[in-house]
Image (cartoon, rainbow, N blue to C red; front, top):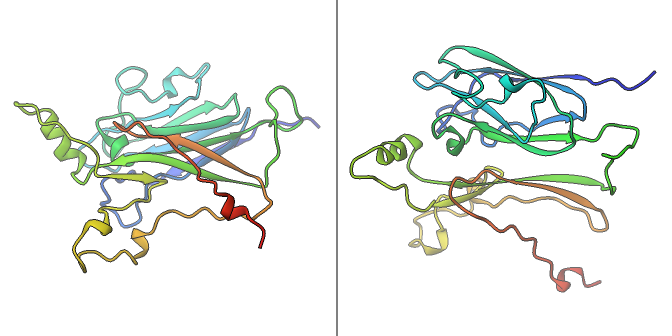
Length: 234
């Protein structure tokens, strides 16, 4: 019996920005699918005063332009309290992103990854190499002021620029301040929230890093340091 596309469902119970709910995290959950799958995402807007729309970055939306998520272009925004179901086919394997497409919600943390695996059975889109595991790296810039404060400045006369971001995030983790520049006792660098992100790897294994950038202003270079000292046999 031949392989058939699957139907995937991913449910957002609510979309909470600016850390108003304890369970809220950024980035959002990674959506995994296989080439040819139909992805169904049901989005409920639980914000009280803002519209919402979700754009599926890189997905071609062949035959489903209304699911592209560009508010005011391909769809009306999702009103507070309303629910909208996005349905689309992922026809190409690869690493993609999803993010809010209304106001400054993307910068506020409404974003995540879409990972599409190649269809089984080989073919022109088959993976060109094998690996033992994978890690996801989603880069973002972050301001200490809320997006509401930033938007107020941008709409003011005179114009109030947001300035350079105060932090950079790797998969939602970063440091609010540089503790090394603070006075003794001013911050506790031993807290879990202050630790940098760690990717566990095993010597001799091959890993795939899926890297994407959701930055608003920052142009970043991502490098993996490799020292011969680290690979010297003991």
